[in-house]
Image 1 (cartoon, rainbow, N blue to C red):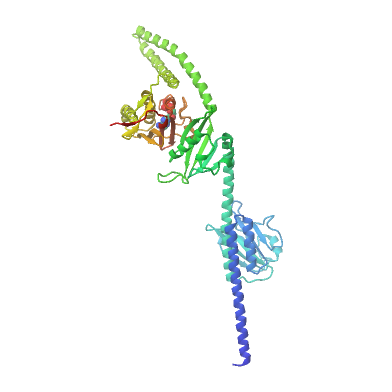
Image 2 (spheres, helix red, strand yellow):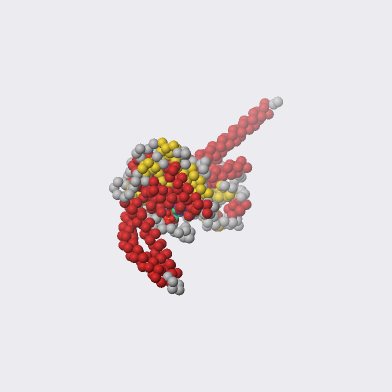
Length: 549
Ligand code: ADP
């Protein structure tokens, strides 16, 4: 081998070596550009920062002059330039808009294909004539994807002729798709941010106090009305477990109790405060899916508290008025009743007379029943005639069940009784407790469809003895639930065929509160209702274990 050829071999080897190392350098640069874009995409939800980072990274690895990113605006039916780098003219401030389907970009979006072109001057496919002034001699347009759709175009341009290598197009494709994902994330983020600020505005403008907790009972949301109602600042509540929250002790205890009871439906209860105010609270479990499944844990609770003092005051005024009216009506009604009875005795023989008088007597009888219920409620509330004795709850439930069973059977309903053998005795008035439980049972019977199931349960949990009546009837809308125990309140949407006075639940509430207890309701429209009475065992004296058969 001659000295000459040896030198040229070494030269070509060196040259080859240099080419290889340049190639490696290029690949490393490309990889690092990809990494830079990937990092920007995963770290920033700010769209402009991500787009700019991507453009700079591209220009570092592909030796061209300028690059741009256009996004599809589906609502406007346009492709809009959102970021540019290295262009002579600013096409972003007054964005370049190309109707979808037009020009080269239209082709790229419609066919989901990369388009590489040379000199643009005079190219009939140019949709924006001003773009010809950029003096572009080579251009590549690459579609960007997100969720399987073309969401924009990444374009790179050079003022001199340039040949885009296959590997460069591959890098552009990867970067384009990363930007597409970033864009999608940023859009999602923006829409979530917008929704959350809208929700926050709603939460803060509502007249109801709202507190939410996570599934450990740690408060994570307090709205402006709650701050105002409780005289506390958000910062004093958020992050605290509800059990330590500086709320009124009765309200706090009620909320905590309701959280343990509200597994599948709302619990509604009322709290009379020592300062004369009345608060009404609805506690609802939060599930990420629409329907709670029995095996699913609530992810938290939302508590809506309203100051209903004005409603209670209005109710009291109404009650006083009705009570006075009932008293005043009683005597004239009695007189009318007697007169009609005498009339029937005297002239009953005459044609049609007895019939007409009977209609009058029936009407008067109905009025008397209503007045009796009203005065009964007044009598119960006054506490006169209360006789506290030890009451065996199992005995109470069995009596009521036996008395309601014939009516239940008539409607082919199933009556289930779940009362343990042994329950603590409570101090109470058997007759009034009987009346209260019968009211709940007869409501369940009245409002539940034929063939429905009614369950009466008694059990002890924590410090309370519970008696509950559950049905699989029509259920009650949430907005009606806080008013159920008001006098004369009847749920307007329910089938008005069912007769009633709207006094039954007011009587239940009155009886239960006289026993130091509380009433509550849990209900879901279309699924059924649970009406419950809870008697605190700590308030009961002389409780002992009753062994009943
Ligand atoms: P009423 O005499 O109307 O039954 P209540 O005070 O007992 O009066 O009940 C008030 C209202 O509550 C009823 O009119 C009815 O709309 C609703 N309600 C009570 N119990 C049930 C139940 N088990 N299922 C569905 N709705 C009920």
